[in-house]
Image 1 (tube, rainbow, N blue to C red):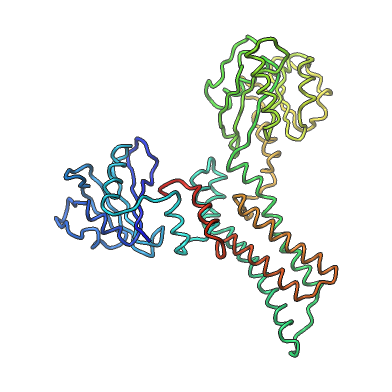
Image 2 (image 1 turned 135 degrees about the vertical axis):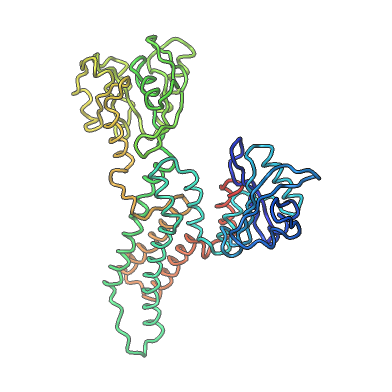
Length: 457
C-alpha cells in the first residue's frame, strides 16, 4: 500500500495542527523535510528513531524553514493503523498546516482519502468494522451519554456481544452437523424443543439490541423538536432560555417571528434541534402567511412537538384549531406564563395526560419536568447504557436480517423442516454476523463505511 498523509486536526486557527503519515515510507518521507535542533544528525534522523519517541526540529520546504515542529514516531504493528506512523505537530492555522502537508506530499506521500487511516486499521486487524464505525460516533458525540456509549463500542462491547451470539450459533450448528454426518455413531438425537428454545433466546438478545437503536440514535444525532402555538404565547422566549442566547426576537407585537429559527441545545443527555416557528393563526400578511405554512410543515416533520399555550388566559379558537392537527404521541403541552395565573381549563387538554408541563419560559420553571418527558418519549428512561448498542443502519439491517432467519428456523421446525435444512439456514445467519464485524463483507460495503469519515481519521 502507498504511504498516505493528511491533516488530522480541525482546520482553523489553533495552538497545534497535526499532520499524520502512515505507511512503509512514512519515516523516510519525514526525514526528507525534517531538520532536528538537537543532536545535529540530519541523515535518517527519523528513520533511526525508535518507536514512541519524538524529535524537535524544523520543517524545510522549498529551501526555507517554515515552522518549528515535534515529530512523533509509532512503529508497526503497534500504531493506530498497524503501519509505521509519523505525526508532525506544528503550529495550528490554515496556512501552516497546509504548507507542512504540501511538503509531506511533495516528499512522496499520497493524500489520504476520507477515513483511510481507520480503514487501514480495520484492514490490518487493529479493529473490526463495528469498532471502526464507532470512531466517528466518538468524534461526533454531542454529550456525555453519547460519548460513553461510543467509547464502549470503540472498545469492542458490541463486537464481543455479537461474537458471543456467533459462538452460540456455531455450537448449535456444529451439533447438528455431527448428528447429520455421523448417523452410525452413538450420538444423542437432537431435541427440537431444546433447539427452538436456544434459538428463541438468541432472538431475544438480538431484539434487545435492535430496540435500543432508536434511543441511541436520538442520543447521538439529536431530536428534531418544533415549538408551535399561536402568536405571543412565549415560543421565542423559551427558545432563548434553552439556547442561553438571544436567538429569537422577542416583542409584545404578535407575529414577530416570521421564519423558523433553529438551534441545537442539550436537554439532559439528549441533543435537541429546537425550531422556533412562526405563530400559527389566520393572517392576511403575505410574509407571515409563509411563516405559518412553514410552522405547519415542521409539525409534521418534527419528532417532538412542543405545543405552547398562554396559561394566563383560556384557550382560544386558534389554540383549539391547532390542537386538532397535533399527534398526541409526540406532543408535549406547555402551559406558559403559569406564574401569572392559571386560567386554562385543563380538561380541554386531558388527552395529553402525563405530557403537560406548567412552565415559565422567562424563569425556567418547569424545565426539569420538560426534560423528563422528552427522555420518556425517546426511551431514555428505559435505556440502560450498559446494554449492548448498535450505532447505524448497516448494523441495524444486519441484526434484523439475522433475527428474521432465526425466526424462520423456528417457524420451519414447527412445520417439520429437516435438520439438514436448519443447518443451511444457520449458516446464512452466521454469514450475517460475519458481515456485522467485517469478517466477511464486500469491498463496496467497506468503502461506503469509510467514505463517511472525515479526512485525516
